[in-house]
Image (cartoon, rainbow, N blue to C red; front, side, top):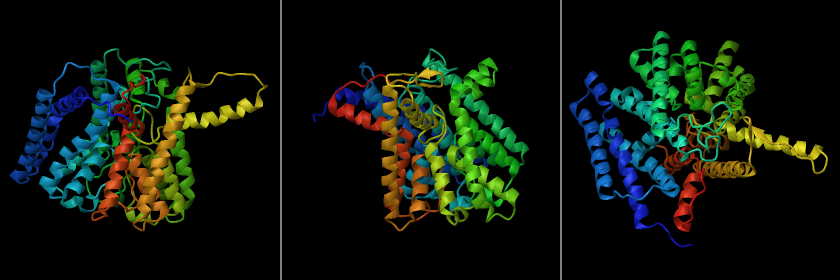
Length: 489
């Protein structure tokens, strides 16, 4: 197979990467006020400045030396998005190395986990000794990455094979939220920021301090699920806080097009009219009911079992917060682990900050079974319309969904098998691999400080592939070698 990636193609990709780095460089300065506020050593402040300056200069150089008038095509967009997650993650790892003194691998793991909104961490056990500015940097990366995921889904680079494949659904139609993409992005950022501010206010009312409220609100709306201290939610259980976090997870895991339509039309029925939204809630509730009998065997009271079961059911599918210790989950019944892992694989809605297969794809797979049953009961030659969310489903779309699900599960199987090499149980390995690939963040204990580097790298790859929705990466690579033009997603 001949390589058809020309020098012009390379210039386009590098130039686009430079543009992103150039524009995102100021975000590396975000932790500096917290470093100053909490009286951290001055070299911590300079560490963030050095990272910002380096990203800015590299972005500026790429823009200047690889500028071209050639138009960015689909293959360029796919490759740029794929490389962006890796390269930006490498830059984002610098504060972990410079401030905390972690190895580059650990720093890369932390930044990849944060920016892909996963939430797995090798630093959680020592968060009490991690500088506040770095704790904020983790949360900020997740918050920043959450909106980045939505924007990439909007332009069709990520989630190319879900209900966002033709941008967003608005009241059952394939309409753009706004005809102008730049204006659309601004509108989404306003919604995202407003939800975050409301989340901070709600958590403050629930008794959290400002720093914790800020970090948990950002982590919840971005569905990254990172903590501010070791096992904070487990050590200081607060039902009101857990309810608020669950609501924020639901909001962050809902297609942001629905939020836009709701805000503009002041009509809450838009959510009830979405099959994906209703199914997302139904999966979490069913998951809670399934694990409740098992959790009740160990919980000190049935009310406590209800709290633990439903919070972790919603959290597994949508975000990754844990209100019990890692050791508690590790000692749980394998059935509980498998249910939570399955919820993580399902994930949230398309066009949201959450990961996983996405509820829309799962529904389409289930609908195909129902349609097949219906076909067998009809008279020979009889036909019927196959619809989803009020729109007729084309055979090509069903084929795309089926291929995606097959590849996703195959990658998950390989990741699970790889984790068992180091002596981890099958249930724990499946839970951890599902958590990484679905960008969920719930851990059975495999992720920890000092874990084998090979396991750490495999989880990083699963997080990266899961965030990219896997197939767009393969499509981009295929286009590079084949020279063909991609279809319009």
